[in-house]
Image 1 (cartoon, helix red, strand yellow):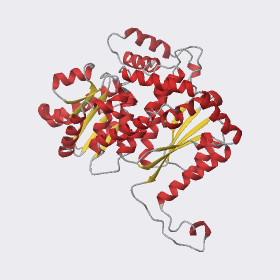
Image 2 (cartoon, one colour):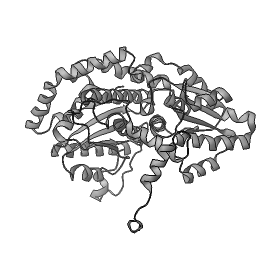
Image 3 (cartoon, rainbow, N blue to C red):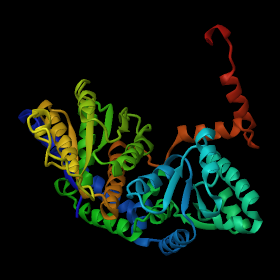
Length: 453
């Protein structure tokens, strides 16, 4: 049960373009082989642990045991986090079909949303999973303090600890210190695994397991994709070929947009994670000043009206690559009744299935893009399940690693994010950041009242 990558939308356009793209990738074959070898060497040196955790599987037993305990003793799990870790959890939880156990990802401190959520919960049957790799994310810690206060007041100083699970760095950070001091149930995010790269780690696998997804199957899918991507040849390695196509698109088209288009509700959160993974990993200045950096803006769309997507993709400059996520088997089918056979607008729909219509809508959009020579890659999922989810996540993580090597960017360097976090903490009065707080106040000071209407 493999996720298949169909590259016809890049390689089989107009004949002259076909030859051009294939030729460009062939010319890159030597560099791509070197990139593949460098990634393998970095893995052997322990520099890419988020790819290798699928083999070490530290804390996997703890993840499954704790998930079983929560499912037995509670009815709702609320995942509390922000940014990449919360989105990585949503990517897996969002793919689980609704079941008896409710899992909610509270990824914002917006008081209207978060306040309403905690007010409607039955705290006696709710467990909160607080996730922060650093253990010092301001928004997440603020949510934690709100929740802790509620639990203390409603359940008491002894029982409240059973309603909190903390997922954070194994050794450092404020949350890890709190775990040591108060004895909360806890899971560790492996060293070197952070933010959106946490989708194949305890940070995401625990809430997914509570929702009903089997972690072993997710990791089996990742291992299967890893095996498929061990090929050195770009034409036999799906992650390397996708990276090559996007690299060529960047150089030839000056790629401005990368759209992930899910034609399945279960894949919407995963599409969003996919887009933001590219932003976090690659949207930064290259190490070598002579290398042009990326100027694209990856994005995702919900399962939407394909006619709207046609307008979006075709009524714009040729600066976009679309990646389709389509499922053959939606887990169920909904038959369309035959009626009004005298009306052509309805007669042809009778006897079809809703899933069939959704699948054909994706194929119609593919055909339109093919006719117009617009670049797209179609990924075909036999079914959305734990095994195929693991394949996709592993493949996308490997794609961004390959692209980081090709573009000369540091996966872990996040100067803009770090600057934002420091300014936020400074503005909120964190000790030791007084100078940054004064700078923020100065930058935001209003100088011209007439400019504020």
